Image (cartoon, rainbow, N blue to C red):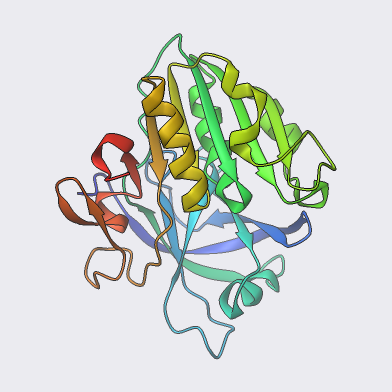
Length: 256
């Protein structure tokens, strides 16, 4: 079940920044004090300027700054809702419910951790890296189609080492995330978010090497509160809602 305070509030657009070839970042200022946000939690965003988008859209919280009451969302333009959000300008207002779901486990100290992301699956990794880097040695490994898709590299580098793969070999090592030589190194825990085949591949690696691993699932969500049941996923303990029981799961809880 979800823990902690949640709010539904208006956020002012501080900036809308193009990122990579198809992504954009919304920097948002809350109209009220932000509750505590854990890495891996998400927000449900109301889309007011799209005639075909009737339900809120879920997005991982890319970054949060409680001192400024600001959050950032990293969004891929894939449908009418996300394209409508990409047209927001400084000073516009959007309504958001947050923070939702259960986040990553971050109660670690003195550990070597690997944060793996594919495509827009890198979204929760910036805030996660910020929190983990306070007491741990952080390495990121990200997979992109090409160098045109690489996002926020310098910001990630402020929290740890960054390793890159691209499918076309235009940056970093050629191939998929799981092809990267970083997997020859030793880590005490791995965190993953991205396409399901990638997460399953990393999970198999983690199990084979007895490494703790958490994954963030990206099932479609309508309500974000566990009422509509459209995001149900199969676990070793039966069906669970990704929006309330997840989106983060230990790989040992999944039938992978």
